[in-house]
Length: 338
Image (cartoon, rainbow, N blue to C red; front, side, top):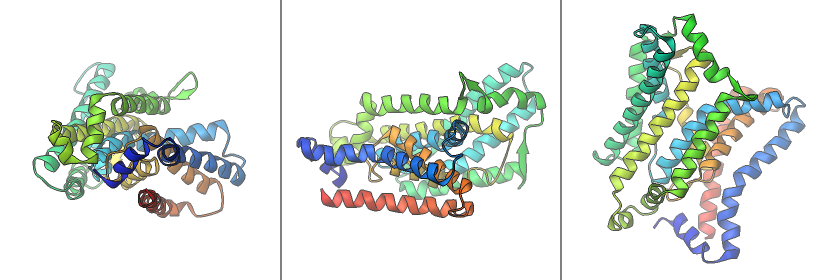
């Protein structure tokens, strides 16, 4: 069993230590978010306005939803570096399909497009899962390869330019998916909680979720216990692909176009959100709501940098890279202490 999982299993038998280690890791992202809200309020009087907070949460939707899928993959001991390029590829195919005008009814057309998004996203995830499990290639290398494939296909489809929706009617019909609200709450925020709720239920309340954690903790022990390790890992990659598809469904109405640069560095942001959310990069421990909180944290950091003069907004990528290194150092120190 991996070191982090061993320590948590041992702490479970000691109530005092359990509070100091397990609960602290689970609560830490939310404490950090609260601290960031206070910092944001001190840096700008516009930060804590309802409009700005809703805007931050809405803009975090893409990474938050992708991070839900990444939580499954990482909890099972895997990694997916292809999600950003997968977003660009799936979005390109969707817009090209919408531009064909193949169906008469716009509403029916959009429904078929949503199904197509899930099909393509799921197929991309399945491909990653098969390469990792059946091909026996390390997840880092396998998804690094598919990242290049998806990005290259997107460049080819767009011929190095942009792929945009041609029909204004379709653009207007799609807009509520991202810009619409339900009882004053933006649709993307609602989708975050729906996806995270389903993900948390699957990971924490089902046999499949227990199998995911078991595979990430110790693959050999899981296999000897009768768990179909390859199948579990493949399903986690499919779930990642489906989460990418949902993010794309929200993304396309926002701009109505995509390019070969769409989704660049989204894989770093998703992994960062998962790690600072308390999921162990070594596998075995996954926290869906922590990952969502991590996505909010990243977007809030960028928002504070834009509203204040503390640092240039062009340093957002550097700040995010620093955050993931710091999060890994914290995780490692907790494992060593155990």
